[in-house]
Length: 464
Length: 73
Image 1 (cartoon, each protein chain N blue to C red):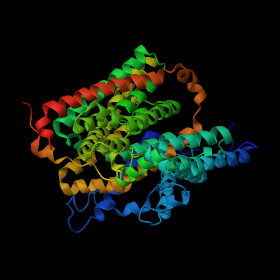
Image 2 (image 1 turned 180 degrees about the horizontal axis):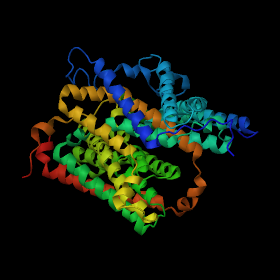
Image 3 (image 1 turned 60 degrees about the vertical axis):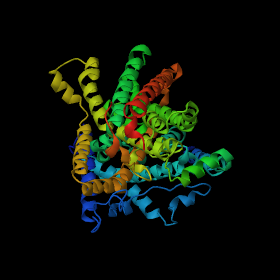
Image 4 (image 1 turned 90 degrees about the horizontal axis):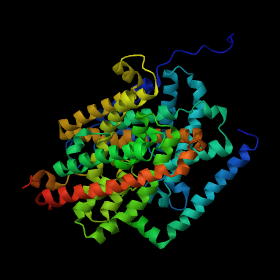
């Protein structure tokens, strides 16, 4: 007999729909506020606004700044101004998103509030760990520390009940992905013309598909989702691709953590090793930049490695990686369709038509992610003024908010991660073999395509 | 939280504090690491950027793409 003292649970919306609604509302807010504060002069000048129009929302969110010896230095930016208030407000955005999710999902917002505040505090702590200069400048990104912090607390101390009530890692990551859609601009795909398209669009899908196939059929890794996440983070653009495809194929927390760990480890090695190797091989810096852009996983590491070959190489490397960033939407959508239509189908009995079943399994928030991407891409391509509007909204607000949501999501994942489940797979060494084998293929094909396009076919075009 | 939780939490925080406030700054003063950090700072590169929107400067379309790209031959 049900306990009469307990409140009757309210019917709530499905998680994917809540993530889409909250994410879309945040993107709309960013666009509206940035538009309302558009500069009266030089509104279409990229020289005047290199990172887009300034948005008032940027004052409501920031993260701890880099520090060397004193963690308190993280509360001041390079100009010495205090960023304590925007950091606290950044945490408040996480709390607001968590509470809104609970309310729309049919749970009591008050019950979630203390845990959401704790979660925001842990996310800020993870950011603080990631902001130490040695960590920061060697590209050990915040997801690693958010996961580590969560794992440490979850396994050493235990998760208190008040914090457990707010754990909604998947929801926070899905909302972050819908917000991320505003940064995934299809218009950017043409930034490097035909050579850039060939380098990114030919090599990336080939490496992704071949690596996944090798993982499933040759290495016989039991989890297809793990194969997909490792293949995507290695062939596309590291952590962000792992998050998007992991959500699209419903990878387990432990699988996503493992893929991200592999990606960050090899990114550091490749960031340090590739520039001297390119110089030793005597490659043209433009070809070397394209090679770096096509192979190193993380965007920041690509710029760091590319710029050490020269300004032009750095430009090419960053732009090739930006094209790959812009492919995440298409790849996540394709993975979601493939998973709903083919992979999941094989594991369950068919009760309905193939299309109805696939639609039933399709992760709906991917549509929100794609819609945000399509709308912002369309606006971006309409005029130089609108491009600055989108850039200002994303660099000033949505990218920072997405970072906080991912960070809080990774803390949740760490708190709930049980690596014992992955122990047999880890002990086999097969995920490592898959990453290394896939990256070798990626290195070979990217070098061949970069040499073919930037070094030969379009050589006259790329000579500065 | 289990009965020994607060003690273990203090140990975890102390451990992180020793590594982050003692170990990492010491590594940061080693010549090769210090050189790398200084170089990245002077070039205003953010190696930890996950996506291009987090870079200090947005990647710009190189001028030769618009003006000089020609199809082979």
